[in-house]
Amino acid sequence: MTVALIVAAGSGERLGAGGPKALVGVAGRSMLQWSLDALAAVAEIERIVVALPAGVAAPPGVIDVEGGAVRSDSVRRALAQAGAGDPVLVHDAARPMLTPELAEAVIAALRGDRGADAAIAAIPVTDTVKRVDADGTVRETLERSELWAVQTPQVFRRDALGRALAAPAHELARATDDALLIEREGGRVIVVPASDENLKVTTPLDLKLAELLLSARAGGSSAPAPVKPA
Ligand code: C5P
Image 1 (cartoon, helix red, strand yellow):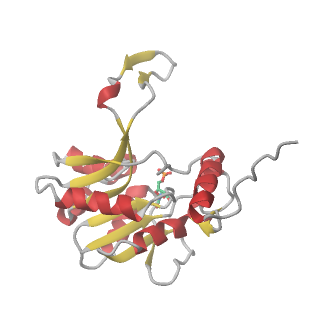
Image 2 (cartoon, rainbow, N blue to C red):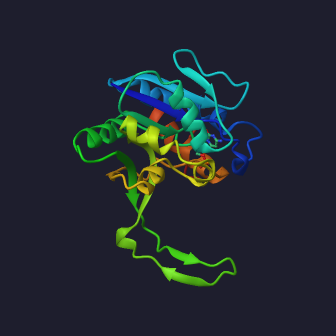
């Protein structure tokens, strides 16, 4: 059975919401609650642990832990409270558009590939991506056909994730996702095609987009009313 970890302990400074990002309301629920509801609908997930800012409690039915100073530290703390279960699914609360189908697809991809240590949701990159120096000079244009933008959920064999999270603190601090830590030690990570709707809410514009998409999904009324002809 799978255990799921949701990291929700970020401050959300770039969103400017004046409080923990995971608790910001989107289409009638907190961002965290949208992810919890999606994962609760996945039959093979037996337990959910949420890493939250100090002093914030998780909703009933899930285990809460205090998050760490950096994202990987929050993952490590959540894993320590996860009890038995393998594989381990890790999801960012900043992605409230998660669907049960995507979580199931990522879990199934790892199950179907015995040689993989992790399976991660991702989409092919549509922009041209360049490496740029600090002074603004373009140094390199990357080959777009090989580039994928990586999302969560990411699903790991438990022993591989445990080993990866034992990396030194300075490496954990630089890890923007957990799969990176597996790659670094030579592990095999596979991508699972996801949807560009599974966006990460970072800026106020992302929040508006998530509000529109989730309102439409919930059949709610907070989407803008259609413009009536004069
Ligand atoms: O910092 P970033 O926006 O990449 O955060 C991705 C996810 O990691 C968010 O859901 C955030 O709440 C979580 N996070 C955390 N603990 C931290 C930093 C980020 O749980 N110290």
